[in-house]
Amino acid sequence: MDIKKILTTGASVALVSMMAACSDDSSSPAAPPSDNPDVVDPSNPSSPTSSSSKTTAKSSSSVDANTTYVTISEIMYNAPETINGVPAADLEWVEVTITSGKKIFNMAHETVQLRLDGAITYNFPAEPLDVGEYVIVTNNVELFKQAYPTFTGRVFGPWDNAVGTSSPAKLSNEGDVIDVRIKGEGDNSCSYSKEPPWPSLANGKGHTLVFKGGNAAQSSNWGASKVVGGNPGAKDEWLEPSTVRINEMKPFAAGAPAWVELYNYGSSAVDVTGWVFESKVRNEKLKIAAGVVPAGGYLVLDGETAFTDEAGVAKELIVSDIGGEYYLYGLLDGDESSLMLPSSKLTSGIVDLKDGSIAQGALVTATPGAANSALYIGSVVINEINYHPAETDAKQIEFLEIKNVGATDVKLYETVSGTGKGWKIEGINKEFAPTDVLPAGGIMVLFPAETKTTLGEAGLRANYGIDANVQIGFYDGKLSNRGENIAIKKPFSKATDSNGNVQWYYEWSDASLYSDSWEGFKRTDGNGASMQRVDYTTMGHEPTAWVVGDPNPGK
Image 1 (cartoon, rainbow, N blue to C red):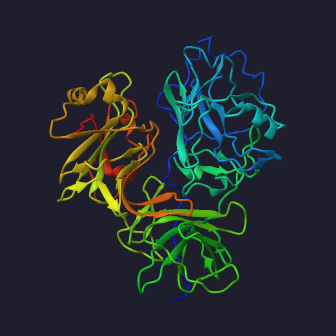
Image 2: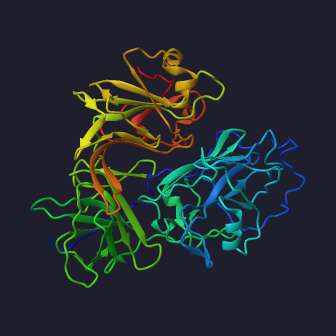
């Protein structure tokens, strides 16, 4: 097969991703009422220490001028070896600001209690925070000051020690969640990740993650900082990606080469000759021999003929069915697209959703040169999500319900190459045990781990009227009140690197990138309702796959 250029008309696709990120919670006040003189000082809008001219857009379409919104605007989670000539590999920091509303007069006041929670924890001191001021919270204050000698703003830290240790907690290089909380409630929930489609330049390559604004539940609204080392206390600048994205990929099979489909959502054609295509699973980089992706159109690259090695010699692209990370790099910094393939013999790619976002996964049908088909769905699905229980009802508890919609029992534990591994639910930190089995048509209700101690299984059943024949389980994570990606994954394969580290690869059974901004879903965001599944024909990313109703676990 030769390189094929396929032009389509009327196609317009926004480059957005399925990973969850910082998202403002405009459904509840993030600060005390503005007439509280101990907290918000309307007579003094200036900051005693403001040093930044940054601006950050709100993700919500409606902003209450009397509500103070606090957000994380920049993250350094995997620092380079040096910053400004200073050894800084162990340095981590986050930048915090008020994006709109009133100044906080006292961050430690009893009606504010501003703190970071989740991957790191930190209680802010009894100091003010002005609108538009940018402050840093770090694991090492002195190292930060050495690495950024021109920074003139306030630096707080170190954040709290890791549990059971005498050293500050670390931001995982794999990805994690950081919450900004006011009086215990989540004003902002921030997820980051090293995996596609997050910018790889922020993963140990010297750059930070910078929040660009817009719908912050989408990773495309985060960019890699334009400046190596990041922009603490300075104007937000980031590297804009190309308008070309990896749209669909077919794995190699005997007698059938792999292929890669690129899509250009821009208004101008893009020449991708010489662009680099990287397979992380094979630790291999190939170049595109020649090709142009038309505006609003597709380019299908044949694995046998479309690629060369670094020396320009033709070389076949192998895409394994075990999945993994794949990247496309343009000629300029920031020209990047990436795709996380699940383990599957099917083609995988991106599906555009009705709310303007996208989802990725295995596809029911291969569609080279055309819009992608529906996402493949397995037999174990997400059936109900109660992500933000009513704060005025003590009986309401967060939970996630899964269901086996298949005709046979599913053991939620696999043996792969002689090693046992449980299915997992990504997003809530849940891995199943060897004894976990979900019968045909069966339901399992999962609750946060702390409820196992506070209420116990009997208390949870009584609380929601769950029958004895419905299984109950527990998870260590937490459902974000703003929305995040939840995925049920089945172990498919594993590989061991030269250092003895085991990498597991998963087949996706179901996923949902739920959002508190979905039209008609306001009741699910702290107002007493849950999301309940009604469509099992594809993965649960579309709002139309769900209805809103009173929490009904186990039914």
